[in-house]
Length: 103
Image (cartoon, rainbow, N blue to C red; front, side, top):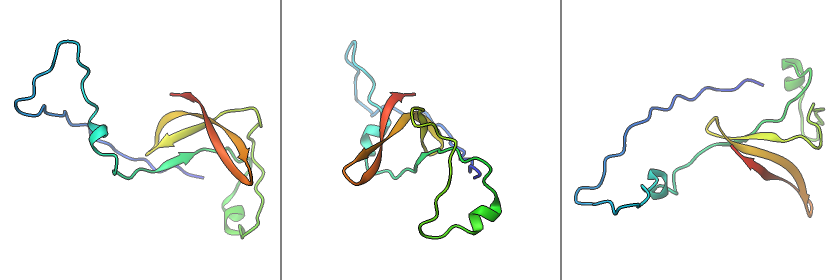
């Protein structure tokens, strides 16, 4: 399946007027002030020999063979940016992923 490209422009964060940095203090991450900001989380699962014809015939209950090896890690991305590697895990009756290594 294709991947959509996302263009992100970085802008410098201006310090709050009157805020002084203490010696040895860490700069606050601008994302800490925006926990409500929506993002797209994606897990990339390799699929072998998958065609548009296969895509058009997918229905509820369809099974797709993948080239994923059970012991291999899968890339985890947020808005297209790699943030770590994951592995599948079954918890009760749900399929989940566990982060095995941050990027």
